[in-house]
Length: 301
Image: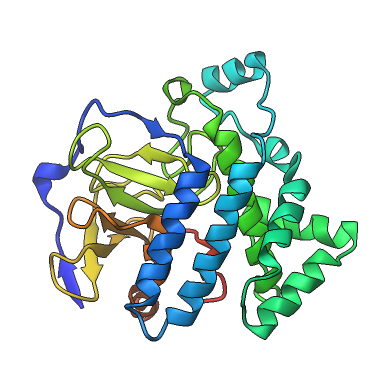
């Protein structure tokens, strides 16, 4: 385990970079699927799960390419959200049409090879009553996955990712405004992790990756993405000091979120590499800090 103190010269981050980059859903999920498949071939312990997720993401890409983008809020509502520094996509916006996206994704997931418990959960979700399915969808919209019902919620969360990404792709990035630390300016979602990039605005800029709508938004570096503190920020990694995936730890709020250095490895992908770096999560379990990043594919770990 390696602990690294922050570089004071990076406090404040990189100025004048775009606030947000909106998703291209089919391309995003294809890239994620390919990254998961690659990582599966280099991670014997997690290989089967990573391949399973790669198949889910491939199905997500197919659904995203087939479905039209959901209807956006009216121009008046979009302006009201901007004026109030609120995300333009609320839970009610994302709830509309989500059941259709789930149905389409379940159809695509039917033929893929998966563990028997996952298959049983898929069948149960497909055959669920409207009220039971609504309960699952409301949970994933709220970002709460019950520990005793992870598998069906994973499939529902995958549908939400597609649905929300399609909705976000129809927004105008230059009309978004910051809405709060660690909060997606498009949908109000939580980050999976943050990425130090080399191809958005300026090399070394840091962007958070939304777990819900997949939008990337800028946050300055050496700053907690949970509470906004710039004090007591340190870094830990399983490997060496210049590791491409680290835990960014805040001593003020007691939380940590992964930070991925795409400027060291451009192939890193927030969701895929968050799962593949599970060893870092296991290491941090033995500390006093609480995971602040959210990834439905890691629910139950």
